Length: 394
Image 1 (cartoon, rainbow, N blue to C red):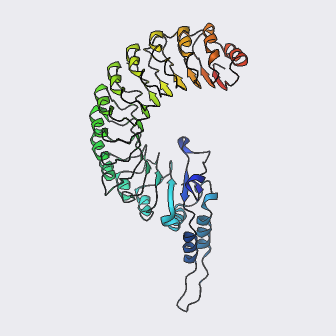
Image 2 (cartoon, rainbow, N blue to C red):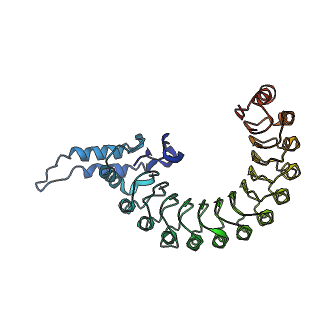
Image 3 (cartoon, rainbow, N blue to C red):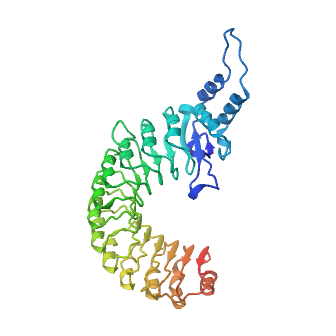
């Protein structure tokens, strides 16, 4: 197990060398009451009333727990000692990031006394299953739970439901778990849920009906879930949704009309091959959209006309649309807030770069597999876009 540590949640330190880019950390409260209680356990009176000197192990456990915020990892500490550290922290533990570790269902039993814990990260812990989820279901102060790439199934998700479960959850990540549409009924009681990641789960249209009542939902990941147009009907009432990922689903142009009421959207990923120019007409009302990705290959210059009025856009990814030409760059040039632009694998040429000179905020530009060379972009950078930091080809 590993973790960077902090006494307070706003003083967390990230570990650089982590599994899958996910940080590992522990967090506990800085209560002076906790320190006093912990220290006293190391000195126990014997039957004569005299203090017994604590063992070297007890002193080490106490010292590590007292200065836990200084440690970047526990990976070199034997598992039994790590468990004693958790026992010492007890109810003061606020969060634990054990992503990529060898923790099992049995290990989660030892967290039952951590009643104040608010965030747990078990991403990439492939030995955690339904049994483990049941063992933490009494941690009713839990607000963030990440269990991606675990063995949790539909049965395990039932532990999340209702007042007897994790009803305060605001963030739930179940990416790549072997769950299906059948489990989503258990999420209906999670009325405080703001972020839900179902990436690569076997959900389909029938599962989304259970999400209709999650009015506080702000972020929804449905990439590679076999969701289609009928499923999008159930999302039309999620008016607080700010981020929606529909990449690698089976939606078509016709399904995008169900998104028309989602005026709070800031980020939309439509990386699907079925989206064409006709579908983009449904996006014209998204005046607050800051990030848009449509990389399926069905767009032409005519479709980009529906994007040019999205003046809040900061990131635009239209790669793999091989019918786009320099005309698209001319239309895109009106999006003066753009920070990142990707029009790779298109028919864009060096002559079209003249249209990008107005994008003074641009920091990232990708035009790979086009008729634009690295020297062309360097000249654009030197002459008109001094803030450009990354570009391809380079």
